[in-house]
Length: 130
Image (cartoon, rainbow, N blue to C red; front, side, top):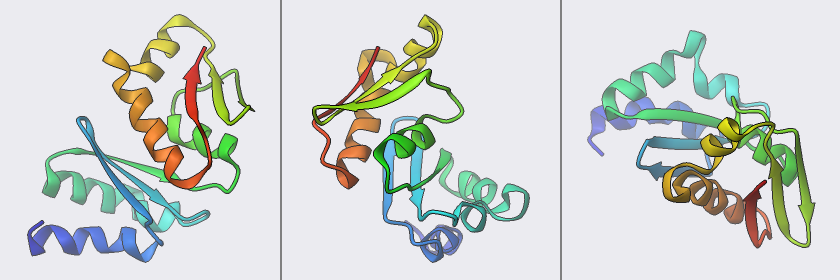
């Protein structure tokens, strides 16, 4: 990345950024608990500037030590009826078919991206949407 872009990423590192995941739709940054406000900046300034510099969508996710809470943060603004952990798998129950489709994505791309992020932090075998 060029230096002009790196200076806009620094607020995310100051918020204890442990991950940057490059997906086809953009970047997902996971920040430490209670540090999301710092990463986003005043009125979303940091996110907007970084989106302009990277020419890609940016999503900020707040980390949680509980895998169920973390997956809820990861799928936000979509809502799940229930998220449960069964035999090492996280099962996300969608309220309707539209939400289920948005959680899975075309060719399960979104689901696999979320699964890889969750696996970096937790001992999870898979993430399923039902």
